[in-house]
Amino acid sequence: MKLNITTSLLVAFALVACGGDDDGGTDGGNAPDTNVGTALPTNLPAKPPVNLASNSSPTSYRALDYLTKRSAMLAQLNAQGAQGFHYFGTNTLHGVTFNLYVKDSDTTFCYEILDKATTADTFLAQLNAQGAKGFEFKGSFTDSPYTAGTVYSKESNAPTYTYEMATTPYSAVGFLNQSNAKGAKNLFKVF
Image (tube, rainbow, N blue to C red; front, top):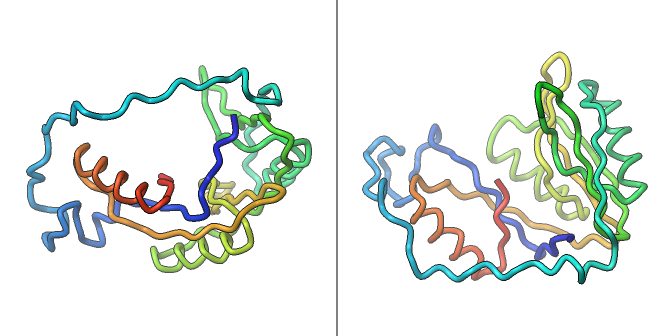
């Protein structure tokens, strides 16, 4: 089932090295977190069951070779996307690494791989430039000889996206509080 994403996304990164922590302090994340070991709230709503029968398209998967050349990976992404398969991620099972694709709608996809930004500010600028064109952040790609890139996908009839960054909290309670506050603003958390 394809997840309908709102027009805004939240990209959360652990920026411990840059300072900051989940309580807004200025200790650079070096002080002990008072929330560590705190039990999760017990009043969380139950997750509603997913009715897979309501999906008008059957879901199918493809596992293809993991590719280490950016041009070959981009060709594979776009070939699968043109057939309606979106990139689900790179996985390793029993020592075999492969790219997993899923088709769960009648949508097609196109992909871009851009050079990985070197700072949080340039990454945020890249995210928003891609989001304005309807591209969604999908993850990182490292080719041989270890040049990092960022994968973006665009589905047909794609909305536009805006991104913001936040410091990742150090505790489950802090994470839930931050996620719920962003969710109340229709932001979707991307890790």
